[in-house]
Length: 615
Image (cartoon, rainbow, N blue to C red; front, side, top):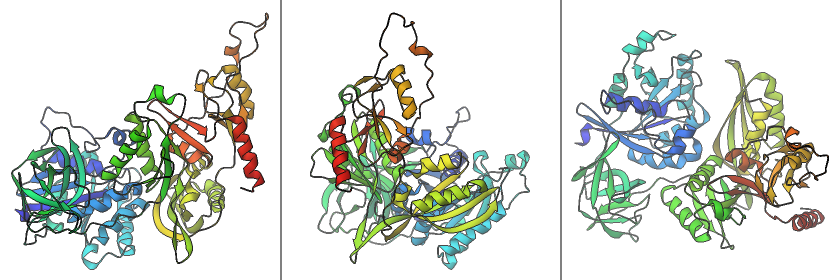
């Protein structure tokens, strides 16, 4: 059976068409009836994934092509979710690298490909979106080859097949068609070249002799059978109702029983009685199973090594929400609720770490980046949790008496007129310009090495400096000696001094002091941030102020006061925006920015004390 199996992971930069390729393979396998409307990005089943257009969690599916079963793992493309990529590479024997025909290899392409090459996996390259007006597939093909060489691919890995296609049209070609590609050519294309390449370039799983071993690489939950442990069977045969040993080392094994066993069949899990070596299976009946555990023979338990996951680079403090509005807007708001939810997260999110603090109402959560942490925050908010989070902080470490901090490789594409501003701003954040490439497709490419903390709060500035015309991508590049202090926010904030509803009159009076974040009628409380100033000092202001009523005041006079549109921040922008003495209050209804110390007098005394101490 193992000879007819191919296990492959699909990897790519965000928005290069990876999930669309999976769609094309599923449609080619006849998983939709003739009268059934196919669902685009069907593997992105999570609501957040569909909203953001990215893959967050690795997912398994399977198709059948003649006598060949192809197990497919759809992986995230953003380096913040690199932990997902690293652990699922244990399940596969080859990769499909999808690259945009115009953009070429991007930083996150480099990240995921590097991980695959470290696992000695053979590759297939698909240059996608060759129907783009600015497509340059031959140039991109050379860039991909350069990337393989740069990452140290061996002689076997560098002899990869190259395909060209438009995944959205289910059209792929072994040879590059004439450009611009015609609609007729696309209609004549199919996914057959890709299926043939998988058959020829990806080896069958290597099967070892001996008792059962299966490494758990993923976890899912089913409403009927409970927790599902997913992984590839290294050796032996796994059977329904089988008694097994589960653990990560010889001293940690405990007994369990397989109550249900599934193979992946298209978009569904198919119940089976047994699964052999080389195949990927989902197992129920092991409620304490964790990612990295090995399911092995009960009489001869033995553990398989698990891939080392890269260390977290950012941390935030999650604490109980003590806002006056929290209890009215949420279901779960106690420290017990918060702790249980965070502990549940680390069971499946292996690159995230949760630590207790001396404050029983606060927990330190470490992740791979701002997006990694913001996805957790948004999911918890939608689940009914209320809590508060601090400004992200980098995770440092000490080696040989030297303080080290994480550094990012930053790749920027932007029009030439904005180059000077970007170089200046990143220089202020301890960034070092590594490369500057001449204009290509009207854009200059800059490559920087920037401390991770220097990027906190920069994306918002970058969009402003480039007027939305630039793109910025980052990937973790290790740890370097600490580069000294960085000033990341050059302005102050407007802070409410009263609790109530913001009035048009009060906001009109506040508008002279800076830009507003709230509108008339917005509930506010003392210590809540309602805007930003152009100066570096914070300004306490009463936005609930009402105009004194007189006998000559005309009805509707406040309505005649014109306000500028408020600044609207996304969650990621809010995480970048806040300072060390500020928090983001999260509830299922909304999120608000606030000072850590709410009382105006107490906060001003604390600020005066810190200035005296030189902090």
